Length: 326
Image (tube, rainbow, N blue to C red; front, top):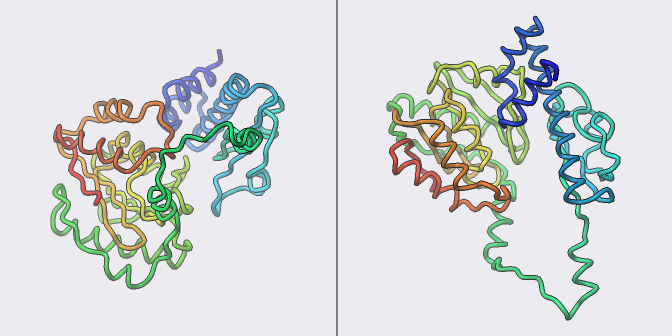
């Protein structure tokens, strides 16, 4: 096994972010930080794609299919744009040809494609079987509401309230309120009311643009370097949620593992503010263990906000965080 393969295997097996191993790779290859990061991120994506293929072959068979999913924003390459949504046979899956990474820093991924087999199965057997579904009409309607983007208005920006976050001073909380308003204005005027993240540190603001569903911290960029290289509890992360939803599993994953982030907030596009903040009793490993206990083997898209709140409640009971998500 080469040095690169060894480091890459650590990234994939441990589920760690490639940036955590950049310094090690930099020393071994006598490379710059940028080149080491680029190499590690790209190689990790290749290994993950090959691992996905093995899983698809096992679960779907050679005749199974997968769909190419590109991260769509201003930075998306033309190649990934052209492949986004296309369906391929699992047996033909080749990284760099019809699967990520298609280029350095590639952020695309793949998902299993099952087509309309479920609908076809029950249509052919109409009257013999019923689909078990305990989802109520109200739940379905609520899911539609939460997923629909709300366009930001000037009235919503004006209505953003002051929130007393207990781990911050009054002056800091006033600054957070001001930046919540600035963030919504930024999203409204420059990002089609989609997600924007602000990283606040020492009175300075670092901005990251995302799409309707998420914000990505790309290796090598200023915001990402800030997250990974800053001192513990030195950053406040603000972001908006266009669909009114609460904290997601992605939000929690980033927050609990990044010691640099003390507080994470959501200001929805209708001006509601939610927050999680770490106390001086916070221990990252304990938070990660609890996260695994709550959400291991669960489909992220099926996780309800109440389940997220129960996890936060457990952290609060052991005095590791304070939060307000309502």
